[in-house]
Image (cartoon, rainbow over all chains, first blue to last red):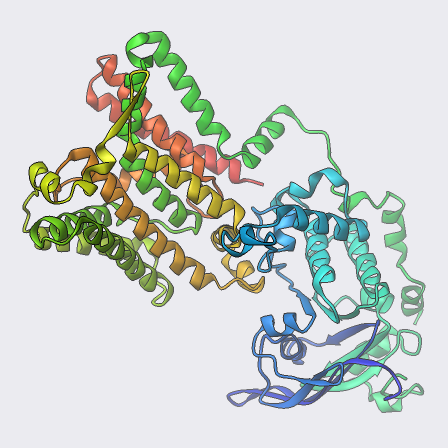
Length: 264
Length: 358
């Protein structure tokens, strides 16, 4: 499997909280331009794994490589600087700010020259133009309402803003934590299409989800997490949903499956 | 097995049905709205609109009832003078309330810093500029104390500032020994401190430098809130601190900066206070705390944070000023002025509850 172009690779990750081991020597591989779903039972440690990859927690041991370079993320800001964006389940948008403001929240662009340097003046036009461009690239826009406050949007639209934000700034990896969990059928559909769009634009996507039909629809490969480590990586066309769930819950030994435990 | 193969087949049956209804969910489409909904949306996106309408109507009614005496340039500039102190403290209060806090100590900081400025210049004999700087530094320090208690000890701002209100006020009485510094002493030792009380006459209007200073401060804070990253961060922190943090904003630092800036603005309020009353009195500005909150609330700023505009506070202060002045000119008893202000506060907060509903 080393023949593939890996964007991100982690090996031997360990994280303990007191006598609880959240990550128990986990490995992780993400290829360039793929959607990798991460599934696992509650308590299997998948959120801890994701946090270790996005800088939200610092593992006790093990290493994370990004483009072959060893990374030491101390905060989500570090991961973000390295080109890894995360869409959080609770969205991390400021409801009363408008769409463009939210896209640039925490990384506002300043006017060039003395206006920006001395007076810290925002370059609103550049930010709005860029926000508009990103949103229309993702098919999320009817032009006039980029100044709409985020709270006036539906759940799917807000998720759209959050996805657009990550897609606009990610250079390597977008991590999405349960992006469809709070959405209705049609809104989920739209967000799933967005995720595929993000992948088709050359970014790698890590998708954490409990929704098996969604996972099997969009994922290129599926990382199955169990008891704090990776126990298999399967493909939607070699394994069925039932088999994936069986591996995830321990009802099936992945090595006994004809396609093996690790998808090529 | 069969359900797995349909999944590989891209989408489940039940979704195809939904899909044929058109994928317009996330298109940010405009929909048909009723009149009430449209009004709601208008007030929602223009937080200054409601208080501006109230101000306009108040001015109209008082002009019709009282006429020339109310509408004279002199009287209008008098209203502006009357709201100057509350307006300046209201700026500080707006910043705090935008972060979902509240500051009960603004008035106490103002009085304490006015005493420090007066004493440093008059009693200790320092040059007026040094006295002024000492006042500003003291204001910043008071704000810093509030900020530390709110961000490091994570105490609720209401309780913190209730405590520091008493502490600052007690320090003020102790340091001033409850003595007033008279007009004449200040005029001799530190005319700079009286600068805010001087005025220019334009067509019979008497504009004090203090009032102009207030308007300048509003403009400055408007710029900071709307045109700098700091302003965006203040709104985001007040709106949803968890989200702001995930977006990479260091919310503690934002809060800290807001409290320090508010402290400095209170010290500027102290400067305007000395200009307005001419002397330095440790008993001045007793009601300023609550009046500044009144101005902010009537100005349409949400007490839940993240919502409101700085100009609303100026309008809120003017609304109170216009009502007090108009009712006084109409010969209405003072108690009915208070009654009206109370009514305005409740109406404003009720409006906010309605407007905040997304």
